[in-house]
Every structure is written in C-alpha cells, then in structure tokens.
Figure 1 (tube, rainbow, N blue to C red):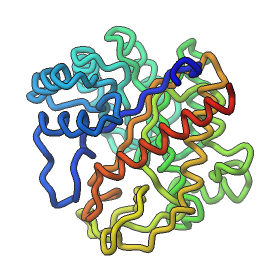
Figure 2 (cartoon, helix red, strand yellow):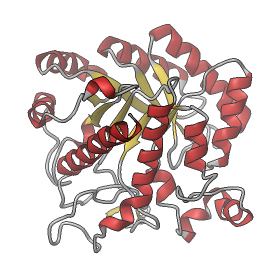
Figure 3 (cartoon, helix red, strand yellow):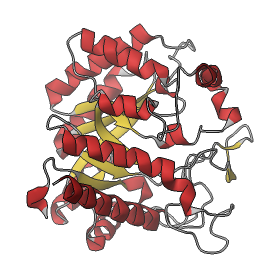
Amino acid sequence: MDNIIKNDLKFGIQTNGIKHKHVDPIPDIGTRFKMVKEEGIFDYVDKTPEPHEVEDFKKYSLEYNLPIRGGGWFYEIGDHKKLLENNLKIGKELGSIVHNTQIKAYKNNGQLANDIEIRDVYLEAYDLGLKFGVTPCFEIHVNMWSEDFLRVSRVGKMVEESGAEFNLTLDHSHVIFKINNIKEQKIFNIDKQIFSGELILDPFVPGNVVEEWINNGWVRHCHARAAIPNNPLNILGKHPDGSFGRGIQYPFKKPQKDEYHEDWDEKLLEPWKECIIMLMKYHINDKNSKLGQISTEFIPNTDYGEGCKYSLFEQAIECTKWMKKTWHELNKKIN
C-alpha cells in the first residue's frame, strides 16, 4: 500500500488524551506509551513535557519505539520568548519536528495584539525554530489571536512578504463549532464578517476559510478533535466564573447510553470530516505539501471533555482508524 502514496502522512496522539473518563487519573508516562504501542495504530505521540518529565519521555519513547514527533504550548506576548526558547530546546532534545504554538489574543499588558506584533512574534519564533531544528506552527485556536479567523491570512501574507515561510497548525474544530452558533460568532464580530460574505465557515461552500488556509500551503501540522456545527456546550464542565465549557469536542464514536449529555448523530460530523478530506487531498496532489502529521486531541479540559463519561482514548482510536482508512482510500482513487 505504501508504495502508491506520494506524500507520507503520520498519525499520532496528544498524550493528555491517553486516558479514559475524565474522572480517571492520568496514567503515568510509561503506561501511556504502553497503551499507545499496544493499540498499534498510532505512529507517534505529541507532547511538550514539563522539564522534570523529559527523561521519562525519552526513556519510554525509546523503549516502545514511539517518536515524540510534535509538542506544543501557549504563550502571552511580553512573557513568551524565554519559555518558547526553552520549549524548542526540549523539542530538539526529544527529536520533535514541530512545535504547536498558541499565541494569546491579548498581550501581558492586557492590550489586544495587532497584526504587526503577531507577525514579529512569528518571525522571532521562526528564527528560533531554525536554530533548534523544530518548526513552530501557529495554531488556529479559541482565545488566541487566530480566533479572529480573517487575521490568519493577513498575517500569513505579511510573514511571506518578510521572506519567511508561514506554518500553521490546523485545528478546524475551532472553526466548525462556530457554524450556526450565534453566541460564538459575536466574538471578534465574525457574525458581521459572515453576514457580509467576507468570511465563510462552511467547508462545503467554495472559498471557505479552512480551504483558503490549506490551499495557501500553510498547514504544517494538524490537530484532529471532532466538533459539529453549533456544538453543544459542555454542561459537565465549568470555568471559574461559573460559565459552561464552550463545547469544542464531540464524540467521534457513538457513546454508550448516558456517556454523553446530548443525543449523538454521526451525520453532524460531516463538516469536520470534510476539512480532513480537503487537507488530505491537498497533501496528495501537491508535491510541495509540507503537512507531515495529524495528532488526535480528544482532551479532558473544560471547553472540551471535562466531566466526560466516554473514553477519550477510544475516541482517538476510532478517529484515527477513520483517518487512516480515508487516507488510503483517497490515495487509491488518485492513483
């Protein structure tokens, strides 16, 4: 099968999702590597560990022959540089090739970061990435500058005009859950952008924003966590202010009775799946595609799976099975 595949693609798992129910304790590092290896479907794990965990990650990566292909962290402009440099050093030590980079929308002084500031931080990160051999990939993510989706292409073009390559982590769950979601569309006034036709979220409509990012050749890394249009709030998780989780995670596999707080409908996953299919088609058809891997990321955080009774690990497994099957089927059709 592999001899017909033009561009390689690896499938991994973010280690915070290597557990079952939310109430279950996170397994120790060795157990998580063992769980992933025994499943036999993942090519790597994805994590930037805490400094005191690095040696264990190195140990079990070697023991189970599972590369730590990627990692990631979030940063606030003004307090970011030392932390970013340290994390890239860790990535180099672990053999990672990408570092998922979340840049908060607001700087450490409370002001909204503008496009020039995001570009400058990107270029700073880009240079550090070249130094350590680990590529920072700026993520599409809520609470980050990129939640104002139209900014992404503006900044991307500014970066390219500066002579650097623009690299993204596509996590399209953050786009999909805003479709038909009136409350979420108020954030950064994207409702007005949608009404004017300037912004298209629906991946089945030509000119949509995910398609634009993909066709610009910017996606270097991808996070796969299923979500649906107007995704149900996570009423099982609350933020410190008492608000429910925003709901940016939907079970990929049908939950058992009482494992999910809403009725489950597989058909609602089609827009999320379409983005993966678009990305895979681009990767097959463009010999210069730089996408290297897709990491599943079903996680127990408040906006995602806090309080969940379904297995996060089993959701990642089923999602990866579908992605691998889809990847091979697309290659067969094209070849």
